[in-house]
Image (cartoon, rainbow, N blue to C red; front, top):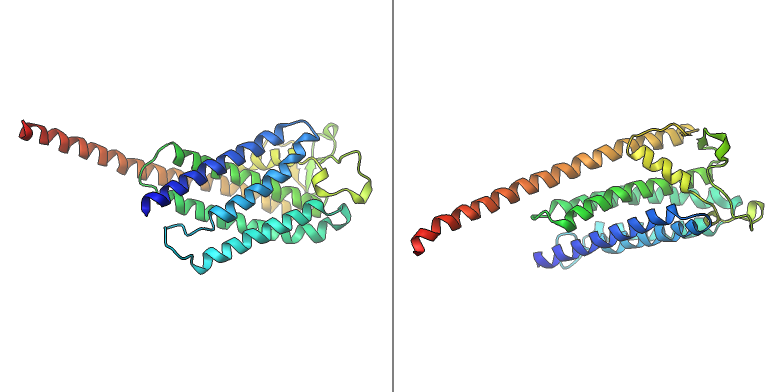
Length: 260
């Protein structure tokens, strides 16, 4: 049973890394092609709800918190879909519940991902991929949260370089308040999210409201904290793994003269 659970975890790590990398590539595409980012983020939420919603320790029946986690993931998925298709005049009403549900779902997802990583006894490529995918997920979800904040309260993030124009660009085929959220280009806001996550701070984009300032600070704290926790887990597991291999080698070396 333990071997099956490990294989399922490793498969999830690979899928999470692939979708995270795919969204990073989509953000780098020229506008309007990068609008596919919104739909990749939907797939990310769905993947987290399905895979991390399973019992993490291999028990046959899920616990009550496994069910609640999936329900929260489903709510985040539906709220995000509603926000994406809502016109600009309804961004506040559609964005606020999505903002709250996604923030809670992201925190819970990272907690469950770290729980999966803590169960690993052998540090291989799939485990490293899972750890990297979690870091990318943190930045991407930070970008989604910042994007929703900008649509709910325009001016939450300010572009210091006025020559670059607005932080999110509309599809020119739209008209005024009828533009849906998916019609905008949020690449600059995603860029600021990763700048905050890595605590680089170039200064070309700054949070303009108290709420956005606190959100930026929270993401800046979460980035190094995630790295510290993951590095602690991986180094401790790798140390134990190295000692076990060395002990096995010593036992094999001591048994050889007896066999001869």
